[in-house]
Amino acid sequence: MKMKIVLTIAVVIGLVIVVFLFVIPRLEDYRYKQLEDYRYKQMQNDLAAKLGVKIEDYQPEEYFPDSYFWSVLKPGMDISEVHKIVIGYEKVFRCDNFFEIYYYFSSDYEKALIFSILYNDLGKYYDMRMDEEGIHRPAPMDRCEPGLLEETR
Image 1 (tube, helix red, strand yellow):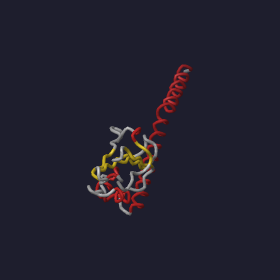
Image 2: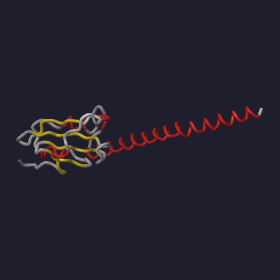
Image 3: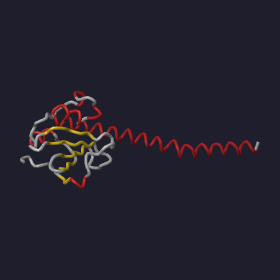
Image 4: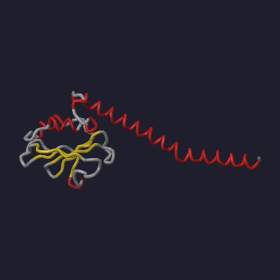
């Protein structure tokens, strides 16, 4: 009988340890992820309102604002036209006098949605490149300075 009580107590203590070491931290990670997703979605909605558009009109929604910019930026646009459209970023860098790197929703390199806008020698927009989950970052940052490219060349 005494052995059963000791064994039961040991099992209960073991279960409590498992819960505290494995279950609770995973629940906290899950709640944090849900909160981050909610914040991200809220930032997307706030930006869409600022741009005067609806996220659902620009698929896939999870890539907003990239999906929006892809649809409205047209090759040959002047830098000044692009700058009127591409707004609401956290920070921007000008690089090598022919492209800009935009950070959306965070100024933290690891958390931001990042994309590059490229211009030709005449200062006309010709491409936009998205950072796909850190697989390739747009450029070595030692070639960049904070701010937008000049609007006149």
